[in-house]
Image (cartoon, rainbow, N blue to C red; front, top):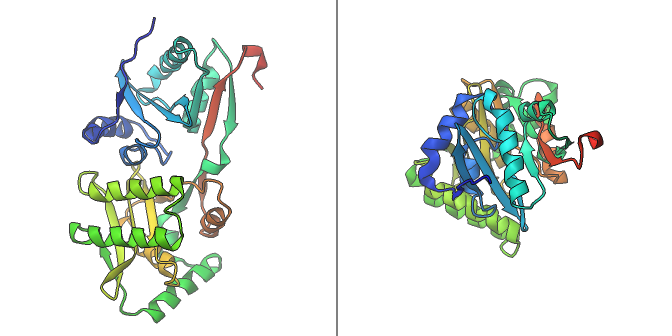
Length: 306
């Protein structure tokens, strides 16, 4: 019998998680404490540590699934075995969602069972050169540069400021206004997203985030925040702007990267979730690479592996 003592994820767990995420180079935008903290209630995220490996599980629509284990590379084969044994004992099918390529390689090397591994294109991360997002140079960024210049010409009084405790309340007002304009207070998924963002803003300093805001007429018309994901990449968790202010998204995007991340090579702007408009917008910024993510389930037998 395998016994794993899972516990609910709490704010105080950040110091433990950070050690795991910084010990190896992870590119998945979800491989950080902030993302897990934001969505812990919606996905009922639980965790434990066994033999130097961090195990995470989540539940969505009554389906329990594993997340990628984190720990030393030499421990990953045993981590796979531990997960398989856990789900077998629970009499539940084994699913692992949102893993990155390094974990796929570990699964392919596992000999006891086979796995069906599928690309999850809707959750691929978009990664850009930070210098591209700052300079917006060349023909491929011509329209982006025009939007930014139009914003500066229309709103010369607009001011970029880093997010501080003094601006948090104004950011909350901005986010409430954004959801009100989009008529999404009755949408349970977007309501969950709004609550997650508010909670991060309430714990902004503790989570050690960096953020930026555009101030116009003494109010926040756009804001964003993120953090270092690994040694050469920053991840942008959230970016919201007043849809009635033309060019606000372009301005906060460029301003934040220039102010906070010029020393890093890449900017990970997360996934498009399969939303056509969001996909078009992320592609328009010309990503230099995509971080692939995969979903996994156990095959009935090794011979059925595609």
